[in-house]
Length: 468
Image (cartoon, rainbow, N blue to C red; front, side, top):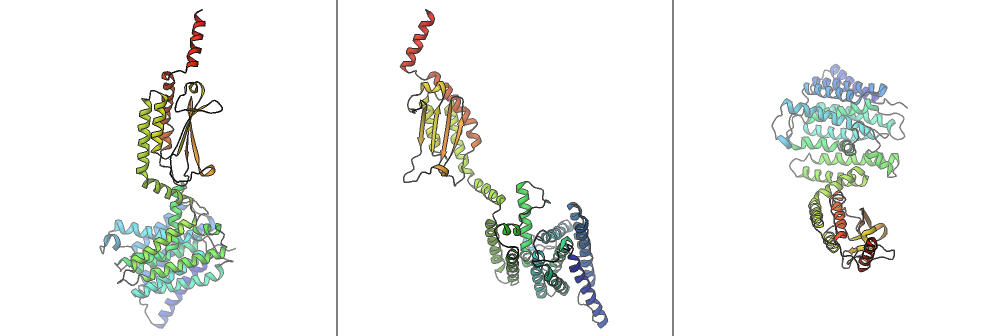
């Protein structure tokens, strides 16, 4: 199956523009736009197209691809197509080259590669680009930008013709030459369309209309960063892959994402009404939609990120619980008998995250156990404590979990009934400083613990036999 369908899109755009200019010249009508900007955009787009074509045919290093795209963005800037105003950050102030040039290059890189990344299903990248191109065309009509209107119309026509053969089941693929070229053209057209506009709308409309590829790219970068994978590594965790894993068919996934692209395009067009509060409403709707979508896609990386955020919010509770353990460790170091040890344990865990504790004495130490220890049928001695929860159901079995801390002469088992909420205790502190203090307290307590009468008689008898 042909994997360089971008050649058809590129030639369709190039030949249509050439035919339009030829007809215009033969009819004596001068185009009502800058031909220099037209040729400059096409020249930079041709550079990106050739880069993608070479990557399709031979494969290129990601750093080489990024370097050429940076060159294309720089050339675009040199041709007068640049991001020179960001009203949301700097107001109407015109930015200098040290801010404007990096922003222009970043925008070109972002949009070009965003449409390349979603080119994973038949018709997905071309269809999403078509919706974005329509938005660019409508916005250019409102702003009176003839050049952008003409190029957007031609690009949309090329994409419609290509989708006839690229939609599932596809007979031709867009390839890197097509997806990179289309992405670059959209990035250049959005810059050209918003170049003279200093309003917030000029920034937000392209961001929202290119929403699907931008969101997918942002998720991919964040996922790979959180999982420690190289940012340029390929994976099968893009939005369309997750939808396939959820049971949707190939065609259903494409249609769903077409709907998302169309919805984002319509929302971006609502912001053309600058007099109202539509910008804020649209951004709130888009933000809520992104949060809802990410939650239902089931990314494990973001579940961990949410868990880390919850732990950060609950950090105050964790600090309090850890302080309780540290104070208990200090008290254990000063404990003089087993009764004091048990009292310290009860007070510490009564104000902490666990619901039950069981201190089991082993070996020689169990021979000297007294109150509040109880002897089991197997001869071992236990100190048990349970939290009093009035009217609460105590979970058992799989709903509860236990951590056991092994020491030389004892085992401390801590049980928690609630396995739904994260535990707000530093387990490392529990198994290091607290464990050492408890072990030392138990070892010391047996030396000063009063011996039972039977043991006293046994020791006296052995001493008498030794002196005879």
